[in-house]
Amino acid sequence: MRFAITGAAGMLGQDLLAAAKAAGHEVVGFSSADLDITDAEAVEQILGAARADVVVNCAAWTDVDGAERDEDGALAVNGAGAGNVARAAAAAGAWVIHISSDYVFDGSKRTPYLESDLTEPLSAYGRSKLAGDRAVANAAPGRHTIVRSSWLFGAGGSCFPATIMRLAGERDELNVVDDQVGCPTFTGHLARAVVELGGRPSRPVGIVHVAGGGSCSWYGFAREIVARAGLSCQVKPCTTAEMPRPARRPAYSVLRSERGDQVPSLSDWRQGLAEYFALIRVGSAR
Ligand SMILES: NC(=O)c1ccc[n+]([C@@H]2O[C@H](COP(=O)([O-])OP(=O)(O)OC[C@H]3O[C@@H](n4cnc5c(N)ncnc54)[C@H](OP(=O)(O)O)[C@@H]3O)[C@@H](O)[C@H]2O)c1
Image 1 (cartoon, rainbow, N blue to C red):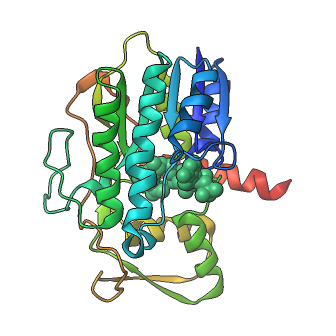
Image 2: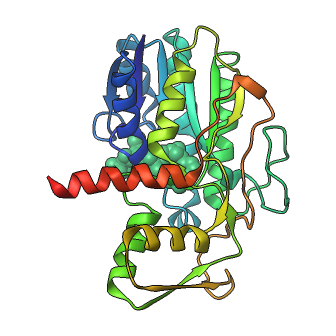
């Protein structure tokens, strides 16, 4: 099968390229320099020529706080841009897999969010991702899978474990929020699951939730990172109110699927963290 990936130089995009190749598929990747998804004409032309069976859209505005200052900018990429990719994929006869986010939920539940749960984003980023979900469904009816995931970390980008290790190396003590709970998801695991979904003869239509197994707070995640890294920094819990940020985040955004064996389930986030550490150790030993 032939995959085309937009946003291919991003954290997830890089792992998707590798996962598609490792699974024996042909794959072509477009970075933001190769293809700006807000340019509908270019998207139609380039995806039309890509001869892909499956288009995976990893291109996104991912600066959550920055989106508060420029909601139109975030919407242009995450909303209209996602629609452009889906429309062009459908016109070319390809299936589109679009990557979405747990931040479409308001976090008021205390049991895992399922695909059919009501969306109520708290932030401009969340609203832009929800606009993308809707644009993709409208542009490629019956020919799309929207994969909602959460708290991504991977070797190919700046992510929470990398930030925590840097800060923990510089300080004796670190305060990390303990009142936001979610599912850290290793991009290596998510990429393999997306490739597996895309390679199926019959793919699930609509929204699927695919996130790391288990759940934790950012504080719990940080403690595990510092322990695994063998750093002596003390990690202390604090509240979101003590660490104000421009964008509101859901207090609880654990994702699970109600679609049974249609949806791949990922390993526990701690397993993802172990694989992440193995990867970055190999990288730093080179
Ligand atoms: N990171 C998370 O915690 C998280 C959680 C849930 C869901 N997601 C979703 O997962 C997907 C992948 O995220 P990621 O973490 O891999 O993000 P990332 O590393 O920021 O990758 C996004 C890529 O999109 C590119 N891009 C931005 N604007 C573009 C445009 N107009 N046209 C084409 N490409 C453009 C960026 O290129 P430049 O760098 O050149 O701008 C970047 O390479 C996104 O849909 C994101 O919303 C992420």
